[in-house]
Amino acid sequence: MGRSIDWYYHRNSCSTCAKADAYMEAHGLKAKTTVDARKDKLGKREIAQILRKSNRVVATKGQKVLDWDLKREPPIEKDLYAALLGPTGNLRAPAFRQGKTLVVGFSEEAWGKVF
Image 1: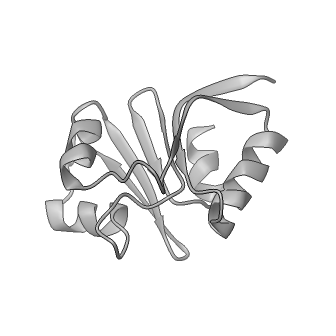
Image 2 (image 1 turned 180 degrees about the horizontal axis):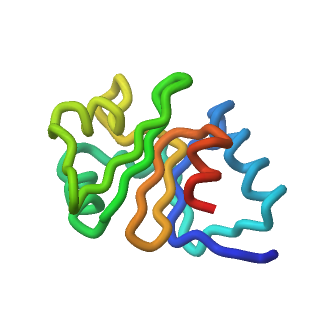
């Protein structure tokens, strides 16, 4: 195993982030860069920069898994940001970027779409 992801955004006190951490450990995934979401808050401007480098976004919202191809069928901007932003207006954690794919939120289904 021993695969890596490019960038991982999480909070230590987050129960969903703990599930993501356990998934990473179980699947031999390591982050090249880890960002603490409590210290580095990413708002719309920072997310827009990440999206410019992305071709695909996979986001979980409750039980729903949204999968967008940003090049072929870009989503409506407000729908995209509704899936990516938490109640504070910052990127929801956990999130990771692998190549040109951004994944926000955690579910085994969503993460399995990428790995």
